[in-house]
Image (cartoon, rainbow, N blue to C red; front, side, top):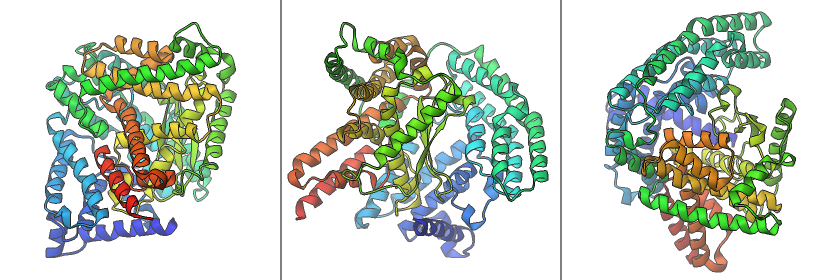
Length: 609
């Protein structure tokens, strides 16, 4: 694996040198026109994007092994002009891609062509909706993404690293100003978040800037890093911490004050309309969001109908299990709510309880990792660990999420669990969540994608329906392989799938059928048995991320359909290991492309002995 990473970095640097050093006609051809080789074009697309995104470079850590670190003192441009620049780049790249003869390419390059074409075409289609979004909301935005990035991604091993950390703190004001500019531009176009979004962001930022600088995550995370940095003297560490405390007080907090003032000003003009139907061309925008998230041509009405049918099917299956346990007399949702409140299925709401929960998650992951030999022969080269979502952002966050390893191997994959309220963490649901976020879910798929030998963009490109569809498929696969024999854990699995089916209904309900927020909350509570606080956070997430919640179930259903097709057509030649290799070896791709990949595999497998 180390050799593979060296090859990746070498390819990156060689191409970078082509862009920056080579003089004359070849350089002009590589930089501005159609490169002679499509391989060079593939790398150019990624490099141009990465070089404009220093935070991405820090995250991927492609250049650090070679001593290139200047990007670690910069922040990514958040201006509206930069957004328009990125759209222009997508349009230019798509035009160039279409100048290559796809039919003459070998099969692996045709796949890269198809994936990149879909990605760029989707971006180009989005021009009318370039500012149809909420860059600051309770789920993400500069106000919580930037501190989390600094804490989790900016590594500090040397005094130089710490100096770059300090430099980045000084750039918070500029980045926040760019975001404020974008908020004003959007409001001028009629794009204003609902009142509850602004209220939650306001509360979050007030909490962030109310703490003494030494208690802020920007200070405490740096202190933890410095404590582990043996190459820095104690005296220098103290000096760096003193500078950081001053920077937080004098530069970071004033940036938050300005953004807080902007949010306060917008609150007076916000409404309680939650769906994006309220935007200019809102219905067309939602259809665009749904297409981009599901990577299909399904209409909002079709997705809504699929959701209703799946809710009915899964609910019936759960009722059968409950009946078998002798749990009768109420609706499935009511029974699940009772189980959610049962003390035997919870940890203490204390530091000790949270620590034990993290340990148990890790044990679940380690167990299944050692028992997948019959289903996989592709494995990640790097491990995964479980961490708590940072406390300052957990209130508005989802129940869990996963972050990929660094490409240089310096940071493992991380499954972040939301432990804001231990009554929300039911032991019977932990296995399903661990399988989804870690193994064989996100960690397997995304870490294996990083090992792909194809163009660099293939290692990092993200298609939500594929990525989340695989993770939801992994939940079911773990049950099929015998890792959820306990009926309560199986109920947890089915509730998680039911939750994703309900999402199809409420997301389209909010943004297409014009449901108010409370109607969506009531529907999810009535059908899943989830708690009020958890459901409210979920519904509010869908409001600011239209279409995203629909990707999970649509992606899972497509993978299951493709598996069944392969079984039916291949008969005794079908191999689960082979099928999984086909699905995950090439990384994320649109479902439309994945369907073609599986069809080619089936045709090829039929001809082999």
